[in-house]
Amino acid sequence: MTTATVRARIPHRKRSVRRRVSSIVLSVIAVIVFVCAAFPVYWMLQTSFQPNNEIIGSQVNFWPKTFTFRNYETVLFATDRAQFLPALGNSVIVTVLTVVIALIFAFLASLAVTRFRFRSRKSFILTILIVQMIPGEAMIVSTYRVLDDWALLNTIAGLTLVYVATVLPFTIWTLRGFVNGVPVDLEEAGMIDGLSRTGAFWKITFPLLAPGLVATGVFGFIQAWNEFLLALVVMSRPEMMTLPVWLRTFQVAHGTTNWAAIMAGSTLMSIPVIIFFLVIQGRMTQGLVSGAVKG
Amino acid sequence: MSTLVNRRARFTPYMLLIPATAVLLVVIGWPLIQLFIISFQEFGRAQVFGAPAPFIGFENYTKVLGDPAFWNVMVRSILFCLVNVVVTMVGGTLIALLMTKVNRFFRLLLSVGLLLAWAMPALTATIVWGWMFDTSYGVVNYALTNFFGLDFHAHSWLINPLSFFFVATVIVVWGAIPFVAFTVYAGLTQIPDEVMEAAQLDGARSTQRFRLIVFPYLKSIFLVVTILQVIWDLRVFTQIYALQGIGGIREQTSTLGVYIYQVALGSGEYGIGGAIAVITVFFMMAISLYYVRQSLKEEQL
Image (cartoon, rainbow over all chains, first blue to last red; front, side, top):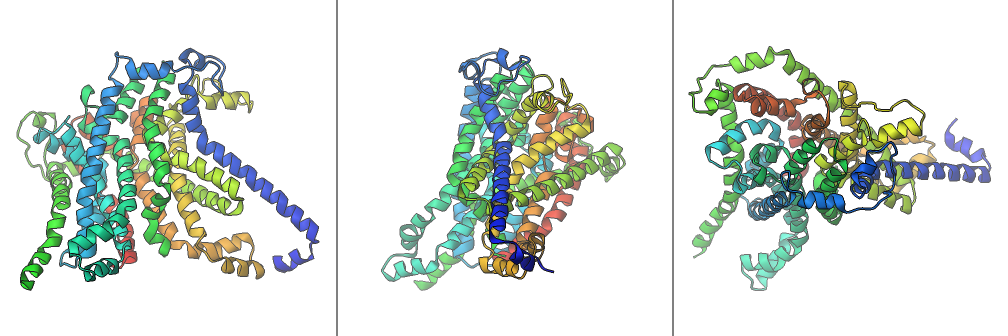
């Protein structure tokens, strides 16, 4: 006997009660999932606003008893450890350079593979896909040696170069999708109206690509900002550290003694990423699985 | 004149590809060649300071493959990857299904929570979870002891390797589920309502509906997402490395990426580290091959 016929015999009211109960249960589960997902972020924030001596007592506070900015002062201005502000500076410079250079290079490459037909086009795209799959963890062995040979260890240029190469394949792949999304017909219409091919591209296609460029750029920003392993390998000198390496050093140095300050440091590092992330969230899934969803 | 334009157009795509190709050749291509060369050389601390690096054939490889420590790391990495991929895929799919069942308010709530988890950088996430699992002042021990009446007072989560990997799994899965949930949810919304309604009218139970309709519909999404998860979880570095820094025994908790780092940059054994890295590259490429093929097929170059 199928469920449909069974269901048909259940009186209408009973069925709607059951549906309401199950909808309440599902809503409760949704709230639990939300709490599990958001709790660590909340815990980081609320710890960072408590005095350290209050978080290492026998009582755990789920909301700051005493509200303080002291930990942020410690992180920003304490001079005993590798300092936050120089690390922030390094991170900003490397990240911005990476995003700008990668976007320009990837933009040019994506034009080549979408708007032109040439012999090695397919093999270039295939190479891009394969390069993306080469594990960076395996590459550190020789990347370190090669950068050392070129005297690029502990330099902004060295880390930027490595980061550009890391984000390029993905950036080209995504931008290619965006350029493909703008029909060539539009450009051709412009050319009929008397624009040159280049003119048609800049006046018609480029403005339509702007959102795609922004989304891809933000993605590159997040990757470069969060990157830890290569930064650890390339930037070992205290004054050259980027934020992730700084945070790790800070955490190891303070260990169990100053969790409040460590949480303040974590907050400062996470906030730009979280903000940028919320800006592009929709495009993120789209970009990553646009191929797969079509199925 | 037209031939001039044509000739220029013929070279344009190559000109456009030069910058990207140059960077990839210099930063990926050259070190990749170097990696292969180093893996066949005796390359230790002495060579770093200028001693000649003699070629020793497959000696590094035989050393690595004969080392039980390497196999321990390999098995550990694969097991860790499998557990994480299964938990992430099942959890992500269930949350995606949940998103289709609740009303708009709760769906928004779920999205906000998932986005927060997704946006957290892996390193800060690991440090925050490490603080929550702290032996003396962590909220987890506190909650388990005071709210659930269990004896977790001053319980150390990271000393025991199995427990260490439990914490690592929590961190990795927490960070990875949002991607899976959003992707599967996006796929679920593309299944036409009529199909689901027809199945419901035909009396298919919800498990049957999932097995017979949802799963075949989303098969390609599941495949691609699973492969991406496998690749990402096999390559896990930041979470394990940072968690070892908080507390945890290196020898018993290293995964492939961390092991390469320790052997090459930690102990200065670049030759042996190179051999491990080459093995890792081949291993990963074999797994990724399917993903690459799938991407190419769907893009219809």
